[in-house]
Image (cartoon, rainbow, N blue to C red; front, side, top):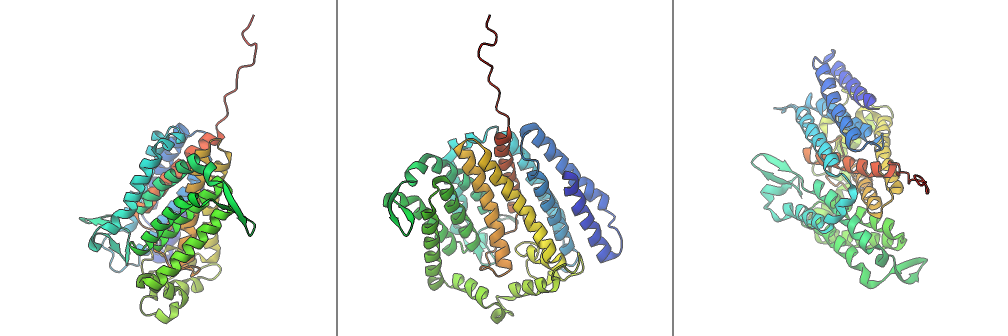
Length: 432
C-alpha cells in the first residue's frame, strides 16, 4: 500500500512536468526517493510502536499528502509572483509532520494515559482557541478571520492543535459524566429529553463556538468544534435528543449572528447570491464554480486547467484545483480516501475495549470527517464558505502537522483494539 502511496503522486508529478514543459522533471527521482524515505521511516515507527495497528491509515494519509505536494507544485509553476517554492516548504512541513507522528507513537505508549490530562487538555485547548482573538488584528487576522498567530515572519494556526486537545478533553469528560448525561427527565415527540441541570456542558460548548464565530470570525472552526462535541456526546449517551438540542442551539446562534454581525451576514450573502458579488467579495467562489464546470466529469488533465485564477487555490480552495483538473471522478476518488480514513478510525473506536479509547478515536475520526465536509461544502456552495484547510492536501504547516498527529493517535487506538488478548494459563497446569 505504501508503494502505491508513493507511485501515484510520483506519476502525477511526472504528468504535470510533461504537460507544462513537455519533458520529465529532472528532480523526479529525488522527489520519489525523498517521499519514499519519509514513508519508510514512518512505517518502521508503526511496526516498532504500534505493531497491530490498522494497515490502511498510514498509506491513505501518505497518498493524500503526496497528492497535495503535487497540486501545490503544479500551482507553483503558474504563480507569477512566486519567489519561493511552496511545494518545497510543504515537503519540509511534511517532514516535520511525520517527525511529530513518530514522536506521538513513541510517547503515547498507552492511549488510556491521556485520560489523566482531561482538564489540562481543556485548558490548553481553550487557550489556543482564544489566543488569536485576544491579540491585535495585525498579529492574528488573515483574510478577515482572526485564527492565526503571526510574528516575525512566522505564522501558526493554533486551532488546528486545539481540536486535538479538545477531543482528548471531551472524551475524558464524557467517560466520567456519561451516566448522568444519559438520564432523561421527560419524553417529548419521541425524544428522551435530558435533565435541565445536565445542559451545562452543551451550553458552554455552544458559547465557545459562538465566540469563535463572532470574535474570531472563524465559521469553520466554530462548526467543527461544536459538531464533534455533539457527535461525541451522542456516541457516549446514545441519546438522539442531544443532537436535536445541538442543532437547535447552533441554528439559533447562527441566525442571531447573521442579524447582528456584518461579517457573518456577508458570508451568507455570498453563499446565497455569489454571482451578485462576482467582481468583489464573491470572486473567489465564482471562479471555483467555473473551474468545477470546466472540469466536468473527467477533468481537463493535470496541468491543463487554470486553477490559478482562483485566489488562495493552494490553501482554502485546493479542492477547486482537484475538481477542475481531475474532474468529478478524481474528486470523488480523493473523497473516498478520506472515507477510508474515517471509517477505519470508527472501526478502531468500535473495536477497542475501553470507553475512553472509543470516544477518542470516534472524536478524532469525526473531526476529520467534519473538516472535509465543511471545506468541500463551502467550495461547492453547499454551505457558506469557512476558510479552513483540506486535511493533508492544502498548503499550510499547522494543518498538515496536526493531522499527522491525529493519524498517530488513531493508530495507537487501533493497535490496542487489534492486539491479541494474552491467553490465560489453564487451570491445573504445573500442578503435580
